[in-house]
Amino acid sequence: MGIYVAVGCIVSYVLLDVVTTTVLYAHESQLSTFTEDALNFNILQSALDIWGTVLLRASLLLGASLGVTWNKVDGPQRVAKSTSLILLICLIVITYTLAKLLMLTEVRTLSISHQPWLLSLICWTCASSLGVMLLWRWLGKEPESESSSSGRGTRGREDTEKLVETVGEEEQELGSERKKEKDSSSGATLGRLLSYCKKDAELLSVAVLFLIISAVCEAFIPYYYGKAIDSIVVHQSMEYFAKPVIILAALALASSLAIGVRGGVFTLTFARLNLRLRNHLFRTLMRQEIAFFDENHTGDILSRLSADTTQVSDLISQNVNIFLRSVIKSVGFFIFMFGMSWKLTLVTIMGFPFIGLVSKLYGEYYKVALVGQEPVLFARTVEENITYGLTDVPREAVLQAATKANAHDFITTLPKGYETSVGEKGTQLSGGQKQRVAIARALIRNPRVLVLDEATSALDAESEHIVQQALNNVLRDHTVLVIAHRLSTVEKADNILVIDRGHVAEQGSHSELMASGGLYSKLVQRQVLGIETGEEDLHSPQNASWKSGGGQQWRGRSSSSSLSESECSVRY
Image (cartoon, rainbow, N blue to C red; front, top):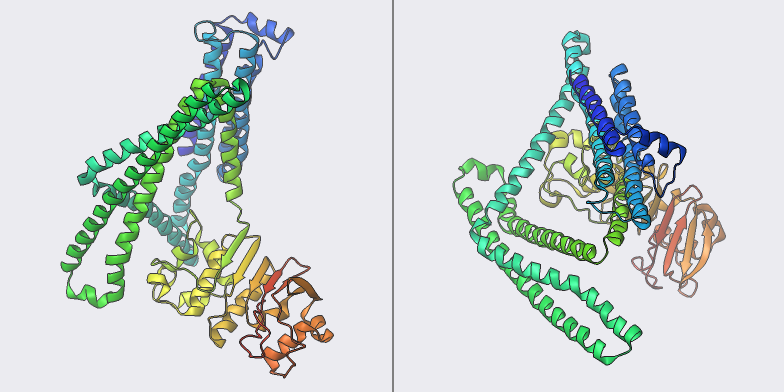
């Protein structure tokens, strides 16, 4: 029934949109307006094009509703996939409507008292376009519950031969339920953290007051900068120049003092919050049973008591401070801009939605991912470390990334599999295991370029061999930039650029460079074969990099010309 409810609401909305837009355009049922504007259409005089946008909105919504009703299985998925396109179309409609408003104000006086119907039509068109976005997203999400309910009914009719598939589907349902519980618990945790600040409400009020003062001063500083420039360029008078300069100095002084007081009060407030968190956590720990301390390491408990409480209070302090400052400054700037010129402000606002859309689409594709020498893991589960920073990641993607990183086998042997906690900074895992989890975290983002910075330098031979197998799997599908001292990765290079003292000394594959007997060959022999080479022939390269014809890129460096093995090692 969910799909039919959504379709019914959409049809009702379309009817309301058509009727309202037509009434606002035709000025209380003056249908002759359509004929006159159609025969003598002028983009600078007529609003027929704005009325025509209702036909576009109605076609989109009714077409999607018909498709979802006709195909309840694949229809909703297709609607969800086209959300970005519909968002772009609606943003174009809104931008065109606002541009139309600016055009009409240039050819005739437009005010609420003289043109209430036209202004109402413009406002309704923008609001209705926003409604189309919301309804489209609803239509794309609604079938999910429908498909899940039908899936449950289907599973009820399955026989025992499909028990494995049923178990897999139940695991997915449990995963989605855990995500919902996690989201709700995150909101509850934030609410509890903010509730600890109630005792410092007076200090927070003082901080907000000085925040407003600093924001107002910063909003007026560019204005008086312009006044000072005008006094020099236009008026060419020191009398006009002195006043804005004095005001600028006063605003800068007041802003600096307000920023200092605001920062100090926020620091004091959240230092008190840190103290309360530690006291509350300590009292909670003292009430635990002995078995709790047997199951949890002393180091982890001390880390929670000292480092985690400080980190939480610092993050809240920074985020609250930045959020309030950004909101107050944005509101102040927009008020100031509207006061100076509402038209220019409208032109500025028109570009924001497209910037947000481009940022959203660009954010879905990761250009570069980095795996460092010492990967950073958090005191969370293996799956949460792999999907860190991402939302709504299916389990299949996690498994695929872990398998590609040669990490799936050891993860499945852990006590709770992917739900096993890795401990503070990954202390429950070995160095090779942490590296493979870090590689999986990079691969799940499907980056175009993967940077491996000393990914195997801190590992023993066995762990390095396992991680190297994972890297060999990665090389076939990604552009890879590897920085390493060990030569085991070099043999897979498509192209090596040897840079000596800032210049390209050699270029080619591993076999070609070894056959040439040049600088690269001497370094390889020195590190791997231990062949004695003369110091005068072994110039230490400042950088060595290789870029494969297949899109893989490697870089390396050696720091001196000494004959010792540590100093003759190459970074690839």
